[in-house]
Amino acid sequence: MPFANRAVPIVLAAVLIDTIGFGIVLPVLPALITRLGRVGIDDATRIAGYMLVAFALAQFVAGPVLGNLSDRFGRRPVLIASMLAFGADYALMALAPTLAWLFLGRAIAGVAGAVYGPASSVIADVTPPEKRSAAFGYVSAAFGIGFVIGPALGGLIAGLGPRAPFIAAAMLAFANAAAMAFAMPESLAREHRRPFRWRDAHIVGAFKPLFEDRSAVPLLIVCVLWQLAHMVYPATWAFWATIRFAWSPTAIGLSLAYVGLVMALVQGLLVAPVIGRIGDRRALVIGLATGASGFLAFAFITAGWQAYAIMLLAALSGFIGPAINGLLSRMAGPDRQGALQGGLASLGSVAAIVSPLLMTQTLAAGVEHGFPGAAFLLAAALAASALGVVAWKVSNRAPAATAAVADA
Image 1 (cartoon, rainbow, N blue to C red):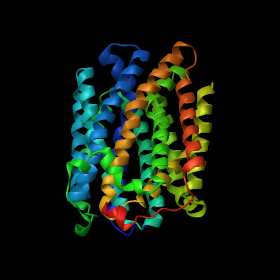
Image 2 (image 1 turned 180 degrees about the vertical axis):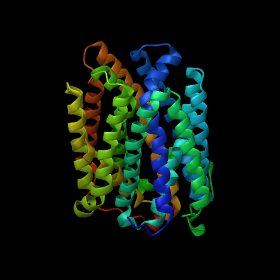
Image 3 (image 1 turned 45 degrees about the horizontal axis):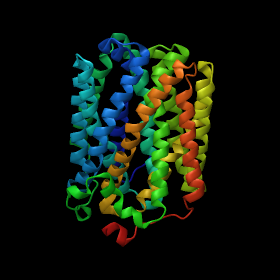
């Protein structure tokens, strides 16, 4: 696909490699936690939830900070520093002797994980407002492709031991940082940079300029509700599949790879033409409706093959992120794209703090009462609530950044 600025394919590659690094370790987490913690699979599920909360807390603080730093100094140095931190984190986790070290590694990854804010800001910098939703779809597609490669590779490497995927992820992150240092141009023009102010480097400061537009608050609510629901996948999938179908790490890795593949196909091939034809709001409705239906179906399936069939429908939820991001990005001026994207990362981390605890505890409680699909049933209710907010409050009007908003 052609790009007007060579920073875009480099950023997409960065997102791809970063996601490979994240996904490559998922298949071995149950085994590693049970080994280091000397606990059963049900307790390991809860511990994994606490680890995701540690990640999200760090990201909640770091997201707006990195976003505002990228508005001040540019996207390139922030992205390089984040990748170096990721490499150090995975190296640390590869050597972790106890669960406490794993928790420390997750906190470091949370700080570095705010990289998606600066990465999405690059897209906003070089893409016309009316084409941003489609461009954000490419970012989501890179994430999906990474999720194809990462878990599948992790499932294969798991045969070398539960720490081998962490070593591979560290090598990928360091290679990514080196590639950006040598090949990535800066996308933020100097005239669009603004001073860094700590009073803006938090979640409220990131969104404050948007509140003049009445469509912003409902969209942010939808974003939180969807992220709460969608976190059921990273929070519980490996454990749910182990409990429900007795899948091995390799089988879990292959299932996650399939999820990533169908999501990447939707986001890479369908987002741009569908949003271009029916608009952001209708695409958002389709995404939420199919996402809620997928969660509901997962709650009650009885055979592993059914999960593969359901994901073909649920993959249309890939419209949600690009549609929301495109709508909000058009409400912000060029000097605040980093703050906006950092704020969105922080907002997502609020959901990631609450949802892993909620979903893993719901899964564990459901298993204790003979209903392992309980977490997916909760996710379906949250996604249906987000759909209700869109139907009630989100306008068909296409927002555009004004001078007042950009300068606020």
